[in-house]
Image (cartoon, rainbow, N blue to C red; front, side):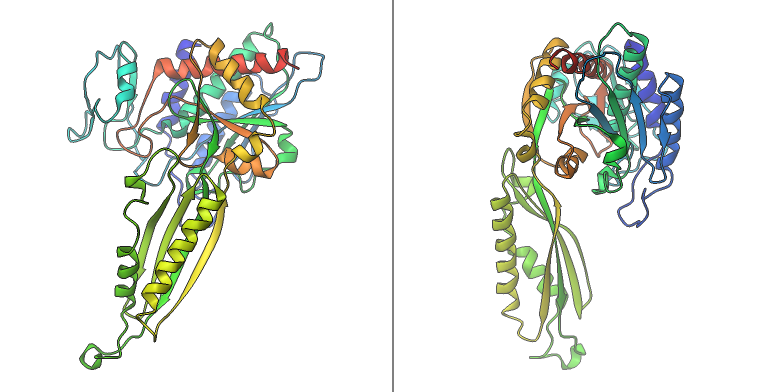
Length: 410
């Protein structure tokens, strides 16, 4: 079990699986299926006879029950794609063995340094083996660490039939990083009652809460006039957009909030003199807070637009996902069993909230209640991403213990 998860992880990260938000296909990039096919081959090789890749790029597989009594069917889920924020092409993983402490300078780009004061979790890794990229790409621990851990746990359960467990389903998704991870998942085919995404960060953490999330698109129609004759007539859509951005509350941005604070975050702007568009994401742990922030943004827009009587705008809110805690609170055994598994795996369990979302957010509201377990990675979506071999091994052990806990408590 010690070497297996690391070997698998090193194989997976060199496969480019970056998703593309501008694509309309599912998966958004065909290259995600390359990893899917590799995973199917490995799952078949360890004895999961039904492992397969579907037309949408999802991988499904089953670890059959080895007990006679009824046990709830649980699912372990991770995603295959990497984020579009930073390149995932030509990843060259580096292993720093027996980490002695201090900053880690990445080999191919000396400007890229994982600094202890910015990544205090490194202080818990003394003596461990740290895996990074070479600094020119992201690593892909988000979420290929989760993939490797699930496959390694599956192999351990298959190789040790004396470990009693119920039926366990495996689901590997595409396009999680662009918010489409479970758009085409067939829950009837999956056949699970409860689930866990293995997509968290620090070892020992279990998360049962995410942001609630919406997006907002603002389309502005200005008044375009030849600049030589524009006095009293021109209403420049670019300037209107700029005025809206300038009015955003400074204390309600991602860079000025933490903990349970929500935010209003501009993610895109484009425009000409005659028309412009603005894109936002709105986040809050409470739906009422989400609605308040959307109302605040709309009030800002209307106030700015009042100074441009010849112009018009359209304000469109789109639902993205909701806080999964609403669902998980109805099924406390999901988190309770994970807490016990983490404890048995030798860690002090830490319950927390995610300042973001996971496939589990959507799955929970689709009818598959789903919490999030640590995968061990840190500094996701950046060239400073890292994970330790020992934390991945702890995740494997946690999944094995989790299978046992569900059987024992059924």
